[in-house]
Length: 343
Ligand code: 13P
Image 1 (cartoon, rainbow, N blue to C red):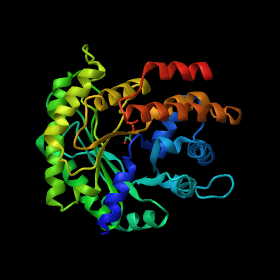
Image 2 (tube, rainbow, N blue to C red; image 1 turned 30 degrees about the vertical axis):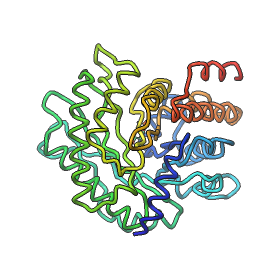
Image 3 (cartoon, helix red, strand yellow; image 1 turned 90 degrees about the vertical axis):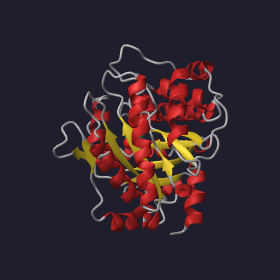
Image 4 (cartoon, helix red, strand yellow; image 1 turned 120 degrees about the horizontal axis):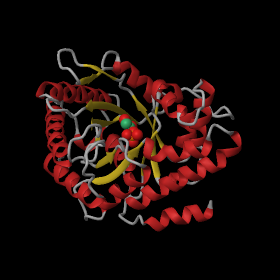
């Protein structure tokens, strides 16, 4: 393990003003995203879409790294350059999703366990040779009246730690993603309670697995009310509740926390990150690793049409810039209006 290199990569991924684009939708998930614009998901439409994202000029000011899916890692831009190299040429670090998805946890109705540990060492070595410098594994924790159970939390935390140790052994920075879902009608307090329990379990397992936290990034959910809850908290409340939980459960040795957007609207995800960064210095960088919150407006602008590529790239640049500002707590609603005026 090259710890110095892992630490340097982890810090570069959470450099001031920058965050991560999650473009690692599996073939099944990207189909769902393309369905929203009535676009067929084929190897070529997926390739064209990822090329559109990765060739957007100037986003490297706000985007430090991009998470790719296996297929994308092996695809090329129209000029023949492998897509991971298109990113690396702009100083954007390529990463790779390595889990194989969440499956039902036997005997625990409603709970999931993420699979993909078998053969992972060899797959990580392959991805590193293709240019990846970091990886991602997502665990999924749902909230219900009787879930999550301690067993469900433990199984997922253990798998995350096994994955993280293998990553560091293969000189890849692990992004550890325990996602507490925002589905359901629970209030923000219940999300806080579950998120704290999950994070405490994850850091205990990382310790037991001898993972170096200095070369690890955490990708958590924000502490937020369930989508179907009658009381939706505002940005200040989300920021305070999220930081309270993180300060209790995340060691200061972790260089950065890169939030997932999890179904929040693009503007909401930016506002919440901004509110957190306005609360003053924390032990870790507070950044983003957004999928939907960066890409929804891009897909809407693109519609699968060659003639709309420039518009789609403008939409991506704009959201990246807004989140870049939120990294400093300097995002304002006027930033959205200015983009509309320039469109
Ligand atoms: P969302 O921001 O759309 O939640 O995606 C982030 C991600 O990578 C989930 O694994």
